[in-house]
Structure formats: C-alpha cells, structure tokens
Image (cartoon, rainbow, N blue to C red; front, side, top):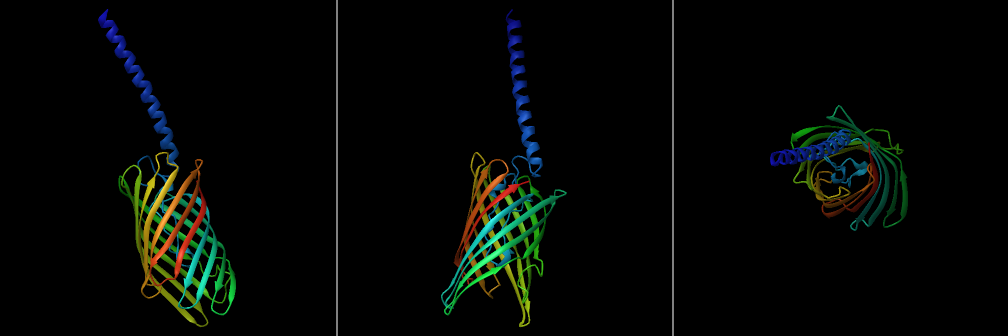
Length: 292
C-alpha cells in the first residue's frame, strides 16, 4: 500500500512538472516568436529598442546622428531644436526641424534607411537685424551591416550620405555623410553600453567656391532598462573634432524612452555642449517611433 501511495505521489509530481514545463515552453515560444520580427531573441544585446541611443545631432541635416549597432525595422518622426549663441560675433540662432526617419532590415545583416528633414525653421538674431529662415530637405540615405560579435554583443558598420539637390536652397549644392563603426553590448540584464568611432564629411559648392570639411567623431552611451521593459534611460558623451579646424564639441547626452503599448515609443533626448568651438549650446529632441 505504501509503495502504491509513493508511486502515485511521484506520478502526480511528474505530471505537475510536465504541465509547468509545457506552460514555460509555450510562453517562451510566444516570446521568441514575437522577437523573431526584430531579429533578436531573449537576452540579446539588441533585444530592447528602448535602450538604443537617442539621436541628438549637432551638424546640419543630422549626418552625425547617434545610434546602436542593432539593426532595426521601424519608422519614426521627431522634432529637433537647436540653440546657438556666439557672443563674439553677436550671433544667435534658434532652429527647429521636423524629421521623418525610416529603417528596414534585409537578410538579417543588412539595414537600409532614409531620413528626410521635412522642414527647418530658424530664427537668426545678429548685431544688425533679425531674420526668419525656412528650408526644406535634405534627404539622407543610409546602409548598415551588422552581426553578432559575442552572445551578448553586436557590431555594425554604418554609412550615410546626403543626396545632392534635395534642398530647396539652389544657390549652394550640399552633400556629406558619415562612416562609423558601432558596438553594442549587454553588461547585465538591465544595463547596455553603446560605443561609436567614425568620420564625418560635409561639402558645400557655390559660385563663391567649394567648402570641404572632414571630422572625426566618437562617443559612448550607457543605457538602463526598467524591470517592466517600459522605461529606458540613456546617458553618454559625444565628441567631434575637425569641422571647425579643432575640437568641435564635447557634449553630455541624456535620453529617455517610454513604451506606449507594444509597438510605439515616446523618444526624447537632450545634448548640452560642455566645450568646443561649435557654438551650438543645446540640442533637444522629442519624437515618436513605431517598431515594425
């Protein structure tokens, strides 16, 4: 009789364990299937979009956008505001951009993207007058190739370029772009680090001559994700040198992302210039992204 009771107890425990294991497998399968659309599974360095760096560009048209080594398929809209004060030249500028950004992943290791500055409105204060400027464009195209570096790290190489003649300003022809190496690594379940090192170029051609600028850029961001995967906080530093002939900018960057449902994210960021020859003192970004 005792043997029969023991056998029944063992069988009951085994059945319960099988049920729990089936529930776990079902939940894990649903989670894995959901992340297959984003190319990354659980515990990958790129699993969560809300810890990606928030772009806070200092250069015209945003050729110096910051990003993760993670390849994404998403669409986003953003408003970017720049505050520039040059006391030596008695010059001040407040500008606002409306940005439309689209990225799509092909064959798991290739991402193609397009970034359109829909409108740029600027208010310029000089020693003699006040001017309001409105511009449209340009269009930037980008390509990124990325792959796994380690179980918890990803690397990528991104190239972007401004398409000439996509601005309403016809007197001067603009182009430029970037080539940047990126790395993203998971430090722990809730902490992620992003690093970047690359080159930036800007060219302006007009009847008065041609201006060519080449700069180097580097930066690092550390991101934290809340336990419910709803809030992401990012802090970091961006450095650029060469556009002004010396140290352009050393800026402190802060970012915040909030999941609104399953697919949408509220994105905001600010960059404050600590030192450098560039007189852009503050960059503020507010946007909305949809994961696809």
